[in-house]
Image (cartoon, rainbow, N blue to C red; front, side, top):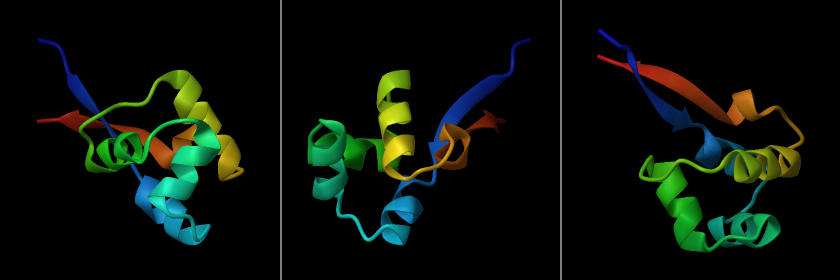
Length: 72
């Protein structure tokens, strides 16, 4: 039997730390506000490229923003 993992994130927390709106972050990484909303809600997993762009904006590692959680 295989373990199933889900990508979770702290994106909303990081946006608050940097005082960025969803629109601000979206413009900085080249996506729509709806994409940021979907990522924050867990409805969309960003590509590696997008995750890296987001981590650069927040001057941190991808793993500080995105992580895997085992689904039970």
